[in-house]
Figure (tube, each protein chain N blue to C red):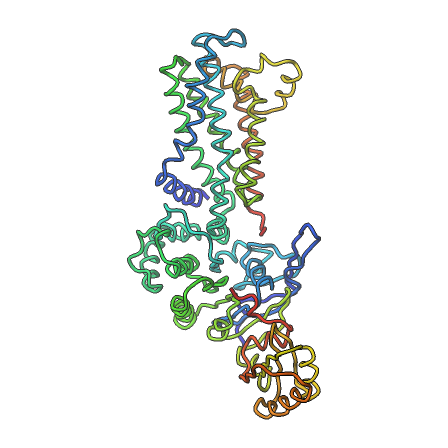
Length: 249
Length: 322
């Protein structure tokens, strides 16, 4: 199984490296937010915002945004692969279905990990001064989360089989999820109804956890965040593998 | 004693759910394929050819029925079936610019469970056989249609399967590339003893390449024989006439005058099968003349596979040929 996953991973990774523009493409949006929106937060009071500390609240949000869009749109590629016949060609081999999807997913995890490091590095000159061990654990959590999201995105790509319906679908799902997790501003600023709603969103726990980690607080909130990421990935990964294995047209 | 069949199906069927209700794409087909044969699945688009191939290659679960493929029960152990068969899908979209022929073939072989060393040596051995020697480093997006199709065939052959499925292998190729690919397919059977099942809607391909034909229409197998035997079924000659006037009247007149075996209107022609074309034409001309129908043209020819299909289904295969 590891060999199969490795074969699929190296195949995808080689293609990605031959066209590295995608790595930067995914970074433009969070970096624009960082540069053109982030500085506004340093002059705001409340919700842990204000001054240099704002960056420890804001950069975790950008990391999550990176993951949700980066992993969310992973399925775009498989629609093209479906057309090229790559998916069917791999499905007629005895390779395990979980290897076929995980090999692809690991490619996204690596890409997102690299992007996350770049994003944090870009934030430093603006005044980000976090707990570095917390950042390291945060990036691991973010990578863990992207496994499930990318796998689910691949499965959705296989189901929809068409970019024109897939793109609005991903937008339609990811934007509310992001806003409801308090990605731009912390949910502590929210009115009660909105906060209650956000508590239904597993991503809220991830971002709260990462925000704690950024200030070096290895708290139960941080542990909950890691658990939420793990839970999301296990459930979505399991569902996606089943979907990938299902013999359908 | 006959060898065990390479493929054996019993009531294999598949239906799809659509907005307008279930559609039975394949309606319970039974057939056997002997080892070492090229078997053609001939029929128009929508006949159920691809659905049949996708079921036999484990890509689509049959709704009902069973099949043994390469000695393995399709339902019980699809993974072992995958190990034993090769599959060449219908021509796909142009591959992404970063895909390199050699890498793709080695990756495919490794997913089939071969070691890297075995995959590399198999690559060196296989490429010259498909006229692809020296193409290892080539980007697929830079190759011609015929070359890409041969690469597709190579994908299905890397693990040296004993049974290979080809879905419309030559669709979209120029005549030269088609003939070239036919040679490669024949040599698989002749030199390697591989059993081949291919789908096609090309009559010439079915006629020249297949040892045996399964003719499909509307999800069913309507005939199963060698191309020659199928053509012999349409005994006699085929007479095609076109007239200045109403074809239905002409059909009645011709029916009364000749009592043909079959009589079908196909587009602007009346197609009759008769015992002997040469002696059928004079009375036909007289009868049409008496009925006041002006004749535009008369053709007599030996039956083709298209005539076989036409007499069996009342429709021409050519209408679907792109």
